[in-house]
Image 1 (cartoon, rainbow over the protein chains, first blue to last red):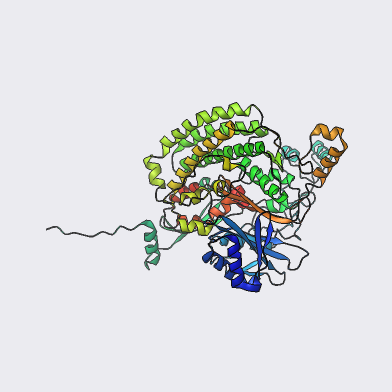
Image 2 (image 1 turned 60 degrees about the horizontal axis):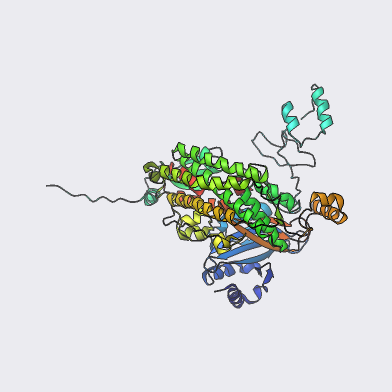
Length: 210
Length: 412
C-alpha cells in the first residue's frame, strides 16, 4: 500500500478529524484531531503497515494558539516511506493520549516530550522526567524558558544555588567558582574581564565573596 | 534395578519467571550500576532488580550528560551548530557532521556537487569503522578479552590521523558546511587512505581470529540479550542492533543519500538477535565499509566541493577582501545566517550506532525554530530491559557492550 492510499483510507476512517496532507521537500504531514491520535496510529499500524515509530517530538509554537504540537514520525519497513502526524495541543489542556500501547518505543519519546515541554500523555505507564532530574521545576525547551537557564536547587548535593554562581548573561547554574589560578585562566565564563582577573591574580588577598 | 528420573531443563528467562512466581522466592535486591561503572561506557545509570544473581528487571536512568543541545540550536545559526554535532556521537564525529549538513541542505532544498558527496561518503565510512573498532575493543575488554582493545585501538589511531589530515582535528572535526565542506580533501589523504585500505582487512581478520571462535567470548555472548525481530521493530531500534535481529534495513540501501546508490556493498543481517549476532554484524560492516571506501577513493570525481550558492556558503576570503558583493554575502552569512524557508524536514542517515535523524522546524530565517535530534543510542537503550531480563548480572556487561551506545548522543 502506498502512502497516498494510506492517507485516503485514513481520511475515510476518520473523516473531518484528518487535515489535508501537506507536502514539503517530499515529506507528507497530516494533522490529526487530538482525541483521535490513538485511533489514527492504531489504524495506520494495523491496516497500513506503519510498523515503526521513528520519532516523536514536541514543538512549542510560542505566541500561537494552540501553542504546542506533538509530531509523530511513522515509518513503514515494507513500503519504505515516512508519514508525519501532527497533533495540536493547547496550553490550557496539555493532555494527549499516549501511543505506548501501539508502539512500546514511544515510551521514552513521550517521557522526553513531557520533560521538555510539560505535555502530559494520558495512559503512559511511567510518565516521569527522563533527562532532567526528578523534582526539577521547569520545562526547558519551552520558548519562555531562557536559554541562560534558571537557577534551581539540587537538594542534598554539593552543587546548588548557594555554592554555584551563574556565568555572565546567566549562563546556567553549573559554573562553579574557580579554585586555582590556572582554572581562573582556563574558565572563560567568569564574571571578570581578563584585565580584572589579572588584577586579582596580582593581589590574591582581595578575595571575592562566593 | 535402576530408576530413571526425568529432568526438566528450562532456560534462564523461564527460570526467572518461575522464581518470580514462586511464593517462597527470596527478597529481591535493588542495586545500582553506574553512572561511573566502566562497562556503562560513559554515564549511564542502570537500576537493577536482582533475584540472587539473576536480573528480574532493570531501569536505565539517563540524562547525566545532558547539555541542552536542542535548546542551544534554537539560539544560533545553522552553521554555528555544526561543532555541536561533533559532540553528539563523539566516537564518530565525521558521520554526525555529514548527517547534519544533509538535513539542513534538505531544508534549503539544495544539492551538493558529486565530489562533495563522495568525500562525505569517505568521512561517514571512516567514522563507521572508527566507531565499530571502539565498540568491539571495549566489548572484548568488558567480557575479559583485554588484547582486542589494543589491536582495535592501533587501527583506530590511523583513522584519527586521517581525520586530522582531513579536518585538522582528531575528534572535533566540524568538517562539513551547509552546502559543502570546510575545504577540499587534502591530496595527502589519498595515499594514507589507500595504505589503510590495504592493511586494514588483515587487522580485521586478526580481531576475527581472536574473538569469533573464542570459546569464552562465545559463551559470554551467544544467546545473551536476545532481541527478537518483532521487539526490535516495535521499539524502533535501528542500526546494527536491528540488523542483528534479522531485519534487513539500512538507510544507505533503502533511502540512498550522498550517492550511496553508486556503491556496491552488502548489508549483513543476523539471525538470532543475541549479543553475538550484533558483534558479527559490526565485524562484517567494517569489511563492507572498506569496500565502499575503496570504490570511493577509486572513483572520486573531480570538480568543486562546494555548492556555488554564495548566499549559503561563505565566499572565498580573497573575494571578500576585494569585491563588494562577496563582502555583503559574507557579512550577512556571518551575522544573520543562511535564510532558510519555513517548513519542516526530517533527514536521517545510517550512522554507526543506527539512524541519526534531525527534525528541523523552520519558521524562516537563520536559526531553527526547533531542532530535534533523533539519537539512535537513545532509542536503542530502551531495549535494554527486554534484553537483560532473565540473564545473570555478569551478562549485563556483555549486553550493554553489544548495544554499543554513546551517552553524548543519548542525552544530547
